Length: 124
Image (tube, rainbow, N blue to C red):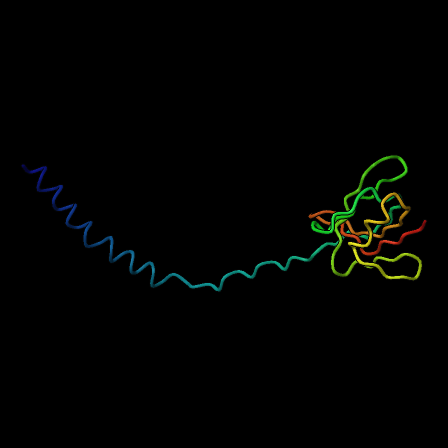
């Protein structure tokens, strides 16, 4: 019985001292401004050149596949800013279907999402 009274007293004291201690701690805690996140600099890879032949063109996927002389295919994503030319004539992506198996020179930028063509020049 005496042990029960001691436990009740401890429980009673805990009920009143814990919230008071938490309030005091919260009131004295300094509020710091959130740390500024580090500015992430976009690291772009340098542009590269490739020559080969047009293996296929898929305007719906904005894709041109260029096969190099050693037979390695490269998928080139064509963006709105990609410049496509045959000689001094500008072309659109869907017009390249008639140029399959022709020689091309492509300047592209390797990116995480794939190789993005900057220029596609039909050379022959």
